[in-house]
Length: 480
Image (cartoon, rainbow, N blue to C red):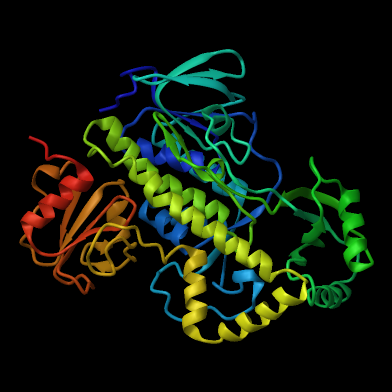
């Protein structure tokens, strides 16, 4: 039942229609939650920035039936060279059907996720920005840039690093401000390719983050480290000046497709939730883009939050369920901030960090070290603290083939799933929230497992009473 008419005009207002906001809106709509997405920009971004979707994000997309559409618009690349740009081959057998990086234009990701959300019934309103809000015991009154006020039961800020929602909420955003920045853009280049290849290799001996990669038709993606911090959108002249400073030539760059700059600030919101207002994505955390983790971290926030917020609104959430969003995702972001700081140190041109980099480069020849770092970057090493139990408890379950197709195909509806190899268990009064699948052939080392809607293992065993306790823990009291 659509509950959007209860307790205000909307169940949830999402501020920001980037990948995180659109993904969250879609996850909420899987549970018939009434959603309004507010986007301050009147039109989608015109520039085409290519981003990388890592293994865990690709797995989540597969769980919702979105992966094929993304693959049609992207390019697969090996899972290698991500940690501090240390060029080592991809580890063997990462135990994922999506063991690759998908390079894809960010506007395509936004468009596909927005279409997915709208197709499920979300309302998206462009040219509408949140400027203020006030919450009470029953909901949140949101003031828009045109003076209109809209009522909702929960407000989620997915409005980026300069989040208005976070600022109005008064949540601290401690961390380290930017000291240096990086220019990034796609431009046409006049210099011959062999000259560029030679010069780039020479520069990268000391500046690992510098790169010029061809996209065809004379267009290159250019990434230039720059000392100090500036403001505003960079110009072609800024790129020419930075190139001359680092390379002694500007390579004849001209006709930019898009230009941007980003700093190396690291900040983490002190709280992800205050009452009926919640933060996700860059509104909750920012860090340098080393390893390409930012977009992925935000999308994974949305998957963690969506089903929990829907459960709260639908009235069956156990008391602490919504609080587990902060408890689970805040430490993950802390870990990402730490590893990006470490990578930035390893990219330094100072003698000490260069010595550490040489040592780590040697250590990464050991498969265990290389595998550990790749799992960290691609977020398949995450284990939420669910209590005592086998190592798989709290981890994501990789996709496996079943008699009925793949495991991830069973998760398209955003519900929990009991995978029963014994055929002896039941989900009973939780059948409206948890699907049941008996398959004695499933390639598992355990008799049965309970999956949350985000694909993390919530329970392992074969005892019905123990299962019922865990169903109650994650999916509330049984119906009836």
